[in-house]
Image (cartoon, rainbow over all chains, first blue to last red; front, side, top):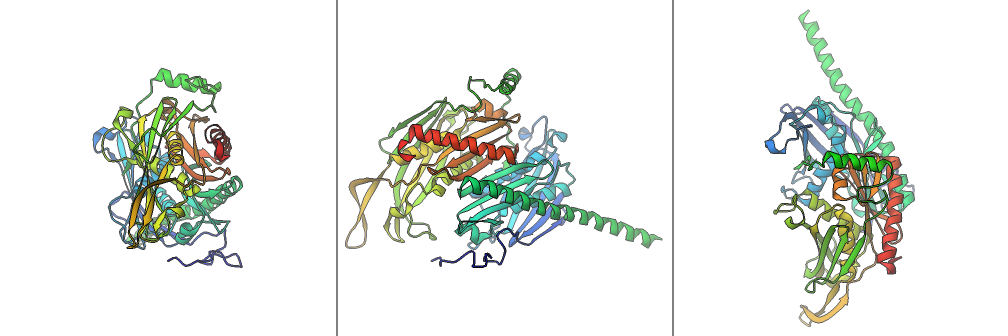
Length: 250
Length: 272
């Protein structure tokens, strides 16, 4: 039986010690898979997600191709060991839905019209899940697309807002999502100022909904700064290596 | 795996006219931007089902059948009944639809309708327990698309709640040896809320309510919001490759809320 647990203490802190509007620790990395055209890894709280991008490449099978743009394929998949109880590796209905909404969250930033008749594959593997995995997957996927050198309008950032014991909480963890009263994941495209993923389940008043949207947007801007930093670091590293090899030659 | 769909192109002459009309606040079928099509609800059309409803939304036709059987509760919710929502895009509904296992669109549809019913607490799940921890009522909501002319979510959501509202719950008696026996009696299925989904589509920066299929195929994105009887939001889903600004989402929420209230007033008067 689930024991009744207070998710917010007297000091207004959450189970993991965070304030209501505090993100979990986030760490990202790009270009870690040698075979993929682009790859990224994210740790968002206990979420550990790896993403690989292949393409643009020839569309296979041919009949799925579009004459005026690239098609995007997306697979969100959870490893059997990623959850408390083993998850069957066969795609669940939840994973099928998430694959669709994640694809729809990422496609608006890709210049697919530059690559007619071709295909871009995005493979997301959730190695460990901890609530808000679709948002972390979107954050990592847009990094992997950028790492693959695919022209993008901007990066896409994901973040959720939940409701726990009547209070809005930023970036709910697994337990807050399970025991909380609402969960609203969003994906935000900062440069365009657009929302490309919006889902909600639970119970929000109009006022809470508008407040939650703004909370999520603000948090996305923070994650966006980390994303850009991650990409820059990779190229600074490349620059460093090139410089070192040049000095060795001299 | 999810892949960019191939959408049947609309005749240029038609899509041009649609977009031109939109700028003057009109639509191909003569509606204004925020007009809903005519809704018709027929309850109890399938006698063998515990509840059923046939909903027409213009030319869109959706049949929902509710079957109630017994089964084990979910391990983490031993003292609650169970709810399963499934959607079938039967091939007779449109030439796009092919026979076979449910694709991402029918799974998404079923999950949006499921969220609306589940999160609003529409069914009193605690009252569906026959033997605590062992045997509960399982409510199967099966959505059957009969004709597809756009906005399947709203038609399905309205049909689902209509069918649940006229569902009968078989009464079980637990005998001395602890076994459950079905009796001849029925109670009404205990319903506590009336969630109504409302969908808007964005076509060239114009927001239209209750999109037809031609409009859905031209729209960049859709947004569905489900409202409870108290006007709270209990489910949201954005779908499609397009995007919305924050302002558009807030605006859309106001429009959808008003429409959901109107639908409830017209068809579910006891739930205001």
